[in-house]
Length: 282
Image (cartoon, rainbow, N blue to C red):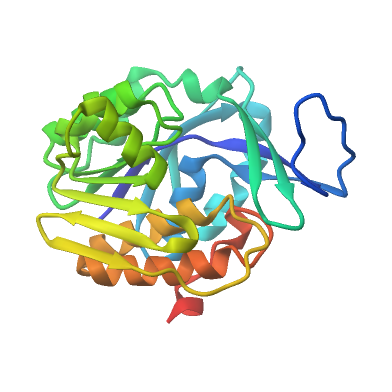
């Protein structure tokens, strides 16, 4: 089956820092690199590297087509990535060299200008048995997930960057919701009740992850590693879970292999470039 991902594509400007910058502080970076980013693009790469089949939908500036090379090399289908006049989305990423923690400033740009027609074109050949994936980094999320649900696709929603009102409004469409512990608490506070979706996965960084849903409940510990760079952990984890579920794994098995992949990813610098191949995990 196929995962259809309507997702952001960014150019990440990554600065390695002695420590994360404090308000009012000016601090020189110890290194700089530009890399492909965006939760959507990185999730598509993770799905493909985990062995899944993924079609990506999104938009970039027509002068930045070369930035798609990493997605194509990983096996992502790019037939529904539009090239326009608006700037490609971009992010400023500061990474604490000592702790591996990060700060991110995001400019949506093209990601916020995706036309409605792309949803229809992207889902024209999709149907039951396929998956739809979206995040909160494009303007197309609600329309895309609504259309995918109407066509019988299973829905995975990565509710980041987190907005409680938007996430709550989309919950009736969702089969698998993936949020971190802070987002889960904020969403429950907003709802005034437990999060009611068939499958809820709560990631907890170095403390592992929890599952609550129609398959029961499970808490899984994280692999013991020394992280050097953490921005790509979440997208790696989601990509491996979705590829696993699409390939027939149980939720626990998918979460287990996803945890191994994310643990390996954080021991490397970079986001998409550091996502491991399935062969490295098994």
